[in-house]
Image (cartoon, rainbow over all chains, first blue to last red; front, side, top):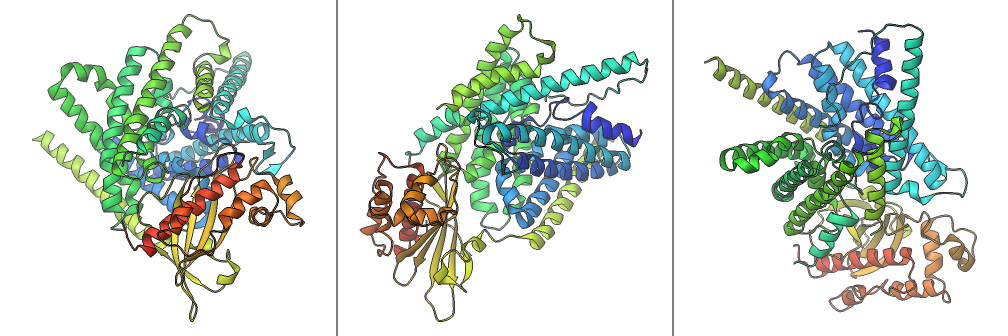
Length: 216
Length: 190
Length: 218
């Protein structure tokens, strides 16, 4: 599998937030500020990359029957590590992520990638997949965070733009509204891109790698 | 001793509703809300696990992990407790009550990775409302009931939605989220 | 037989992973351990320059609604009186975001000597123009200054409300005076900042009374 494919999958084609709709809890809860998107994105990228690497290394060692508990143990360890690191070096980010930091353990993206990708691919690919899936998640969260922050608080990354603001976008309902709009816009762009590819008679198949869907 | 309970019931079920205000447990909320029967089954299973999990993790943290200085093991211990609990409940249900197992059994494996369960065990450690063990259990129980309320209401609307035509880009998740958006407005007005 | 072996292998693998994870975390915890926020008390109360703060275990108990006591620390300096610093985090209240207050108690006289914001959650909830108009100074840029300005304003209603509360500063904390701290918060007209400040005073005083005056560690 080529590195370019993995990168494109993570950032666009299989974007965890917009296409796979995984990890919805932090996406909705933390996107009040653009900065939260960066913080959460970095934390998830760290955990995802580390757990992908370890799980890929151990893919022939862990018995099939107990793979899920084993994955959860490994993921929980890395979540604890990133929590300690953030507490020590970036306490502000740690405080703004609050309860959602430990909840990375049950973030479907991480278990989903472990199951769908890391357990079947060599270390290098698994590592790249972790990085780009994490970055795709971070990009989506930061964009949504910036959107909500601009409309809801009149600022972006904490920099005041104007006095105008719509309180709705800082409310929980605003989170759901924003997420719905982002998915809708994404799927419009996505289908436009796919249609264009088909037109140019490119027969490259849409790599379907469904894995765990949001039904889990 | 009981004075926090009314505040907890109100907050956990409505004003701080797990799904619609705190966004914990969105995955099952979107995934298992297609019909009312399965939504109710899922809600009850989650409520049971949330209640029992808090009953175990709160004293475990307060009287064992914290005094011994092992509070950094919190995440691992909590997720381990939840995963084992789900397994045990599944086995017990299978052995004792066939009808209950058929109603709830299929949802149980999904609960381990439900944010609401790990979320409630973490939340009761920091919530201002929780002072005693009793508060923590009440928070778990009524948080679960609030979860059930939201998911059952949602399923009712989605059953109607099946008969309606929506723009293509909004099919699936987006339209469901817009519905949830209106519900969230009502809940967060408290 | 084969089945038994695989079960054994499953258990063994899980155990090994669990032990390795726990060991790794213990080492990292040792390297990265963070004392709970006692650093936040340094430099808040100018009089206590040069004090060294060590975190005390926060006693569990009900100290009032509206917030949570997050850090209690003992301040020591050679040849000077001991102080207890209490950090109170107040809840989000409508538009007012959570705030953090530091309260300083003189341990030898049992009085609350000083209170200040560490971070103020005033985004949208605190009336800066009001504070500015009544402060008489230019510097209302920080929450602490604005609060002090409000507190020192005799005529303003909000200021007056906080003022009566401020009279509790330098009051010896006894079984009687702690009741003053726990009296009802005036509801009418009080801004959310005032309410949050009441809550913070309230909780810190009750905590200090219970733990250090009465000496009950519950």
